Amino acid sequence: MFNLKMQKLVVLYLLYFSINSSLNGQGSLDDIIDRYENFEESLNSSNSTGWSNNGPDKIIKKQNKYGTLFNQLELVNKEQLSDQDLINFEMLHYILSNEVFLLDFKSYLMPLNSEGGFITSMIYQSQNVDLNSEQAVNDYLKKLTDTKRFLLQQQKHLSQGIEEGKVRPKLVVENCLAIIGELIHDGPDDFFLLQPLLKKNIIIENTLKQDVFLSFKELYRFLNDDYLPNANVALGISKINNGNKFYAQRIRYNTSLNLTPEDIYNIGLSEVARIKAEMENLIVEIGFDGSLPEFIADLRDDQRFIAKTPEELLYYASWLSKKAEEILPRYFGKLPRLPFTVNPVPEDIAANYTAGRYSGGSMSSKHSGQYLVNTYKLESRPMYMLPALTLHEAVPGHHLQGSLAKELEGLPAFRSQYLSAFGEGWGLYAEYLGKEAGMYKTAYEEFGRLSYEMWRACRLVIDPGIHAKGWTRDQAIQYMRDHTSLSFYEIETEINRYIGWPGQAVSYKIGEMKIRELRIKAENELGDKFEIRDFHDLVLANGSIPLNTLERLVNGFINKRR
Image (cartoon, helix red, strand yellow):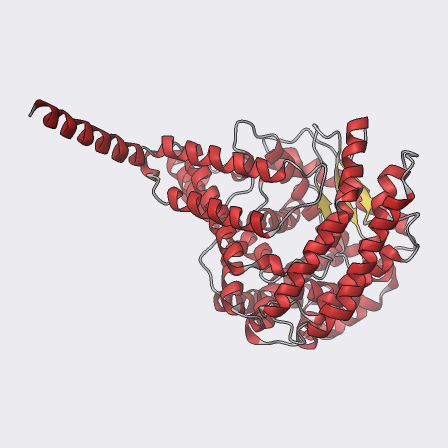
């Protein structure tokens, strides 16, 4: 009898311990984070000696691991979490739910986009590799020997995508073919993947040169002969198998809010109307006697705003960058240590690239951040657009936000992941902040800012127009031409990007609107207690986070300051 009672007590104790452990959010969350981080580290451990591996075994392994971790995360008691761990929870939930969805959907069968997809990723990796030791050189040589396997694996996925009705549009494939065509044009001896070694005068075996080069030639042949004939004529992602489901999830992921494609479309129409009214008022102030489309047409032909040389464009971008740095202490209590530089977009990708972009650096890697300015087709890069572009890409936009995030310590590695709604929303908010700080010195530069804002608002209409409503490319181009002063070349490049990257483009305006909404709320509720530097420091204090997490933090900030 005694033994039976003891057995019952042991069972009850174990049951209590099990329930208490599941309710102890801190303990279970730490365990989930550790297992997630260890798994990610194991996936990335071979990146220095090989390209990514997405073979069948690896895919199954990821599906099982991410699914298990997500289900366990759902059981965590959030009420017991600290402030920082609640952010960790919300961020990891956001990441894992996306990973589970993409694997279940088999998005890896569509590894191409209008800018090249995995091809452009290989270009970036080769440009940013540091061969500063014998070990680094040997690792990179091993990576080159892995090129054939990697490209054949991508071709296998693309072929499976044809079978399962998950194929990219012809336009995307043609853009990728153009990129590869440029890469293989000059033969194997000067091939882009070999450049890091050639710059160090390192001898490369001819067999390796040929293998790498011929692997890309075979990729070109495959895309041109096998994939392109099966590519979709229709542009929208909704035309692939289960495409509507995929697009709806892309909208939720890229905005980090519970919005639908129809919500985005309607918000876009409203914002376009508001910004158009501001533009019309501005051209009256300028003294233009005509309609908004006529003013935009005149601007496109006005050679006063076109740089004569690439250097002129780069020099002006550099000067604007320093002027933007001048305003920072007025609006931010904390600034990053990492400097940034201004460079042209690399020639081999410039033709399909946007007007500018930011590429991050770090103190540990001994690389400054880079504000990349596209000097291809100077006639499509009017100078009055540069103040807004600089504020967005450099400071107080991406460089400031991204560099501060990299200085955060004691956080899980996954907290460094970039969330488009936050990061791009902040970039567009930085353009608005420039107006407040007096960065736009002429009416034309203010029109450039409005045109950039209109550009992002148009995305809210065009992106669901293409992917949910069946718009043609011509429809999308015409809508953008009618509402912005972007050059025709820029517009076509942008539309191609939206076609190849469903849902991403809507993140900018939605993120900016949320940040401005939260600032207005804080200003209204705090009155004289509102301090702009404190608000900005709060927004940037936790790196890139979901917008609903940011809203929760700002509400807490308001409650503490009342």
